[in-house]
Amino acid sequence: MNSLAKLLEAALFASPRPVPTEELAALDADASPAAVQSALDELREHYDVDGHAVELVDAGGGWQILTRPEYTEAIERAQMAQRPRRLSPAALETLALVAYRQPIGRADIEEIRGVDVGSVLKSLHERGLIDVVARSEALGRPLLYGTTAAFLEQFALRHLEELPRTDELAIALRDRNPDAAEPITNEVP
Image (tube, rainbow, N blue to C red; front, side, top):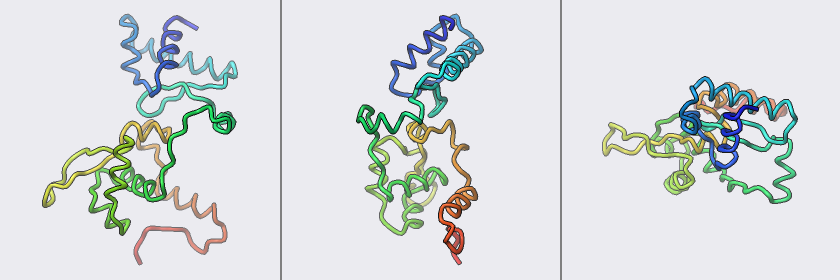
């Protein structure tokens, strides 16, 4: 493994968050963007070919060294990993609405969910999963919410285009419950 790959490995190992390629490139002023990408590819291949228990993952807008999924359960069972707090069903529903319909305002979310979402939005914002991205042009100029890099990181996504399409979700939900008469949709009759 070349010295640039070793430097990147050390930086990624020390970082608790995904590190963007631009930040990694700043570690060595003489390294070109192509050299940094080549070193990342070399590091990823090193972990894959040599059968390491960790892998180099491109998620959340940057690179991160993570435990391979097949070891996660054992590590969690031994309580060695800090596990993010679980999201409530209400928080997951609200987060899904923000992710798929962003930018979206509180009133629109409440209209869809049929309940007040103020405390849920506050909780999601405190966790860093959503943020205010704009103001609407509607009366009162309400805040509009969108997802953050922390959202992408938590769900191991590189970008929002990796979210399942709504038609894929309908198929996945239908296949999980073969006894259901019809697929679940959000269409109003």
